[in-house]
Amino acid sequence: MRIGIVVDSACDLPASFISEHGIVVMPITVRIGNAVLEDRRDEKATLAFLHAHVAERGHEAETTPLSVEQIRDLFLQRLVIDYDHVFCLTISRLRSQIHDNALQASYAILNEYKPVRQAAGITTPFALRVIDSLNLFVGQAITAVEAVRMRAAGAGVAQMRARLEEMAQHTCGFMIPRDLYYLRNRARTKGDRSVGLLSAALGSALDIKPVIRAWRGTTEPVGRVKGFEAATEKMFEMACQRVRSGLLTPTVSVCYGGDLAELHGLPGYARLLDTCLDHGVEVFESMMSLTGMVNVGKGAVAVAYASTDASFG
Image (tube, rainbow, N blue to C red; front, side, top):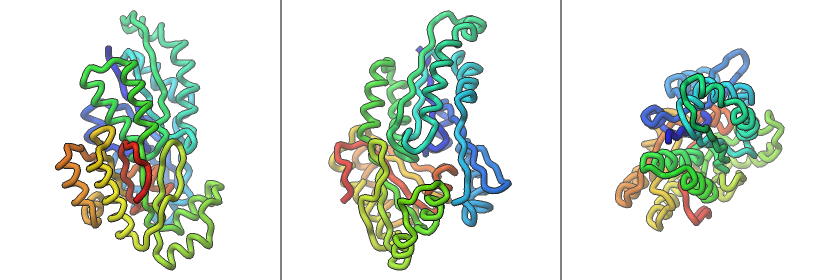
């Protein structure tokens, strides 16, 4: 059976991994004023857009996922012919419309695929499953990597579905923003009052950085550390501890809101890489998606893994 894997462009995976394994990316359109970019995980285009627009006016950005009709067309024009079963792994439905759009589109796809496949000489059924990753950014990457591994190992569709849904339930993503004022302004633009002016001002004045956790569909602060570098070092050390204790899948994903050379210079990161190497855990590092950066600001750093322990510290 030909199994396809689809993610949205907010899923932080290296472009080389996406290309090598034929992962299909549903783009998200980002607009800042008159500047528009269709985010397709192109690192050069993302960096150029970042330097030109995100720093000054990124908090004003509008992000638009594929519509129900666009997702339907993507499947009927291509995917129902290329594959027999597709897993569509999306950002948490509590943070984006993508999951609901994909789910709604799936009904039309399953009702309309037969003539398309028959015209291509394919008489077997087609099926798809939309799975909420219950996470975002690097957290989405955990289920996507697991799907690639299981497909390569010859796992069946039912086995893959059960495993991916289990991974979604146990994936923990942690992120540290660099600029709380940006985060506050972005939240206000989106109508989210959770980051108030006073807390942003105090955090910046005292250089206190929140540690934000994404887990089982929710995003919330779970810790505060003085200094960005100290906060990232603590986050990386926590990840080292989870790796030593044993992860549910041998994967750690890391993303950074800017040039990856800056990520390699952060304290604690080299130790995380060494720890993962010692324990047979593969590290997937990527530039944060443009969608991610306009929501949390450039220079943010995030790490994710699947574990029975979702605590910070």
